[in-house]
Image 1 (cartoon, helix red, strand yellow):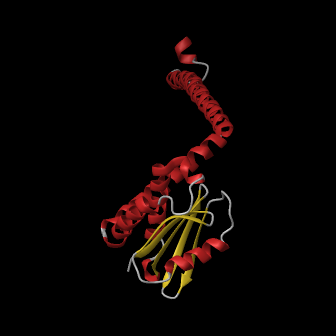
Image 2 (cartoon, one colour; image 1 turned 180 degrees about the vertical axis):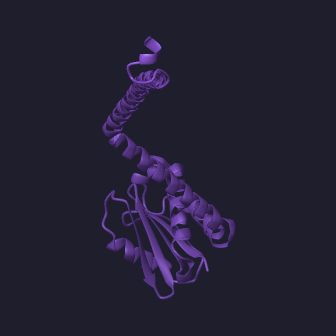
Image 3 (tube, rainbow, N blue to C red; image 1 turned 30 degrees about the vertical axis):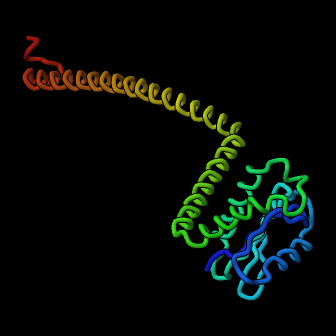
Length: 222
């Protein structure tokens, strides 16, 4: 399994390619170029042919194509296409837009050959691409969360204001509750003392009435 063919083109103009097999990969790739609409839109696509898959990446006016074994999946081939695209743009810059057919082939075909070998045989490539993909996903989620927070800015401000108001009301409620409890305690204490005083007077009266032979205290007054 692996990647066996690579091509970089501008529209229908092939700028560089490399084929490690004795197949008709280059002719099939050119047929695919004819079917792809020209323009600066970015897209990815895959086409099957026998036991091979042609993967295509279109970006910045460039079309990068590779042919891989059908059991090789999509992640590594498209990582290869992204790598080739970045290397090509970095190496040739604006010359890409005016270069003639195969203008970069002598130099860049060696890079295609080298990267085909690495992406086909280096066991670390898959792990690196998986890690890179996970990092991109995390970054995307973080950016998405930041955008949502910014979109909710007004609601967050309102929520903070409401929270502060609730906290202030709760504090005032606790103070009023403590003041009310203190007032009620003193009121109950005074009432209890008053009832105890009344009961004490009644008890004294009953004792005197018993000792003085009647409620009018006859024996005690004479």
